[in-house]
Structures are given as C-alpha cells and as structure tokens.
Length: 199
Image (tube, rainbow, N blue to C red; front, side):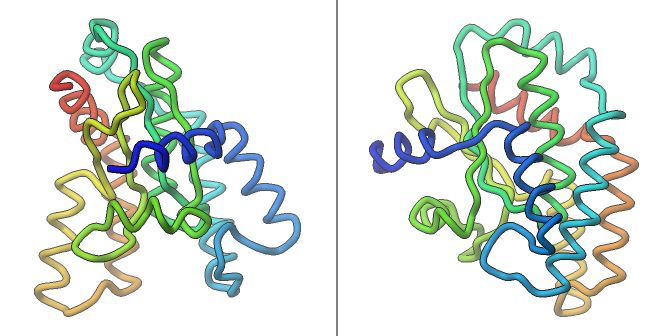
C-alpha cells in the first residue's frame, strides 16, 4: 500500500464534528456530499443526518468495549471513507466516534469517498466502492487492517437477500435499518475491538 497516499489522506481527513457540520451546511444548500446531487441522495442525507443526531445522543459504548480499549498498548487512527447519503455510514460512523471519544489511544479522520477515488480503489469490497470503509492505521501511518462496509451479521443479511431477490430493494433497506437500530452498534464495537486487540 502506498504510504504517501495514506499520509495525504490523513492530512485531508476531517474530524467527526467537522464531518457532521459539513453535512448540515450542505443540506442547508439543498445538496448532499459526493458527486450525486439528485433528490434521492438529498433525501437520504436528510434522513441520515437525523439518524446521526439520534445516535450521538443515545449510543453507549459497552463495558466490554471500554475495558478492551482501556488496555490497548498502542495508538491507532481510524481513517474512515464515508459519505453523508450512505445509510450504513450513518449507523456506523457515530459508533466509531463513541469509541474514539472513549479512548485517548484512538483518533479518527474522515474522508469523502467521491473526493478520494485513489484511496477508495485500494479498498473495494467485491469490486464495489462500498462504504463506510475503516482503515486501522498504526503510529507509522501504516494500514494494519481494514473493516467495512458493515458488521458481519448485516453483511450476511445483504448476501442472503441478494441471493433470493437479485438486488436490494426499499423493503430490505428498511429492514436493515431496523436491525441497526436494535443492534445499537454492538456488533460494530465487537468486531472493531477484536481487530484492535489483534493489532
């Protein structure tokens, strides 16, 4: 992996607060992040902005997660590729933010997918630019692991539905959001903590 690309991406990366602010500012102009300014993407962004507002207020880090991150020996950075219109990102990025808020050893930088094509193309999921994608980076700015775009249970739901129905329709997307709401970030926490502990 090209280390200078990671360094450049980290320099361009913004904090979670800046990311939320950017989305809200764009929404006041009637547009979403990214290159697609259709009404659909605008509506997804509005919905996701409300989701993230709610998650910021209600999300809790589990005792297990807190205990694990308290025992981390090394420092890490989450370099997150996301967009405001992405439903999975709206559910996952607030969880990452809570994890980073709970540990001085973890930092987070967010870059937008459509503005960082070179980086995104290094971390495709089955050939597609699926987001969010989380790169776990060590002190030497080396990518030691990547995760995403969804927790394994949600990934299985997607694969099973595609196998049965060919594509993901509005019904499925609604059911996936219901699953995320019930899960409350638990699986995302478990999977990321496991990767951090292994690093």
